[in-house]
Structures are given as C-alpha cells and as structure tokens.
Amino acid sequence: MKLVFATNNSNKIKEVKVQLPAQIELLSLEEIGCTIDIPETANTIEGNALQKSTFIKDNYGYDCFADDTGLELEALNGAPGVYSARYAGNNKDANENMDKLLENLKHSKNRNAQFKTVISLLIGKKNYTFTGVCKGTITHQKTGNQGFGYDPIFKPEGYDRTFAEMDLKLKNQIGHRGKAVQELLLFLNSENKK
Image (cartoon, rainbow, N blue to C red):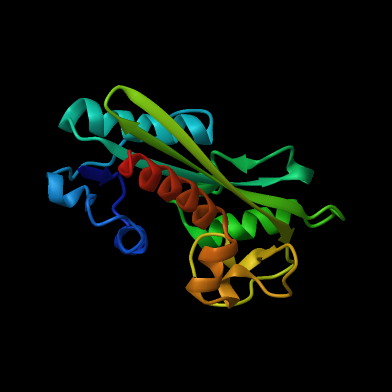
C-alpha cells in the first residue's frame, strides 16, 4: 500500500516512516511531483487538514493523510487557533508570532493553553480523523532552542521546561502531534492486519 504524507517537512516524514508497518510505503509530496503550496483556507484546524488531504487525493489520486496544528489559549477565546502560523502576519515568522502572543497576554493571569493537531486520512472514499491534544501554559519569555513555532513559550502540563528545552523523543511522546500520529498508526496497523 502506498500512502502520501501531505507535508514538505522532512523531519515529520522520517518520524512517521520508522513507525509504519513494512507493507505501507510512505511517499512525500516531492516524490509524487507536488511542488505547490497546498491551500489552507478553512476556518478550523480540522478543515485545513481535510483540505490538504483532499487536494492530494483529487489532484494526484493517492491515498494520503495531512495534519494541521493550532495553539489555543483560554484567555484569548481559543486564539490564535487555526491562524497560529499567521498570527502576526502572512510571512509566518515564529518570533513575531510569539512576541505578539506574549504582548497580548501581558496583563493576563490565565496562561492556560493547549496545542491541538488534527490528522485527516483519506483511504479510498473514506475520511478518518485523528486528534492529539497537549495541555500546558504559556511562559512569560522564550526559553530553549529546540523545536519550532511556539515551542519556546509552551510548557506542557507536568513539566518544568518548554518544548524548546526538550529533546525530540520526549516531545513526541507527550506532544500533540505525537499523540495524533500514534492514533493514526494504531489505525493503520489494525487495518493492515485485516
């Protein structure tokens, strides 16, 4: 079985590839000749994931999965959410996004937040959805140099350091994307045994 992961992030592909059963061949967008930016114009995280997987299925014909992630804050009524990557503007600058978020939380005692990843899997004509959530808090300043995005200001529940201070193995175990990928892999492994 061939399955496309609709991402250009080579680290994400490597991470998932090693966990798949041998009968599933994972292909990147590059390997199927997709060089364009897939639209992400839905108003929900779930919608964006489905939009990306549907785009590949409709235009390239492959079974595939795509993910989308958002950071949701209680004090900001769930913002930035689906707009996390473009919070400070369309250039998707992580430092500008973090600076804007810290500024907007400057006078807030409530720093509760959660990362949410949704994976949309299209096999044949069926869509399956897998969700991973990691709860935590937003720190008052950036700490650490691992990871990407909001990792330097997100401290997961039960830990005294940010995602950016953790190694990738631990982040994948406790993090939102890791949890969603685990759900996906459990499903693929069970389908593979049928």
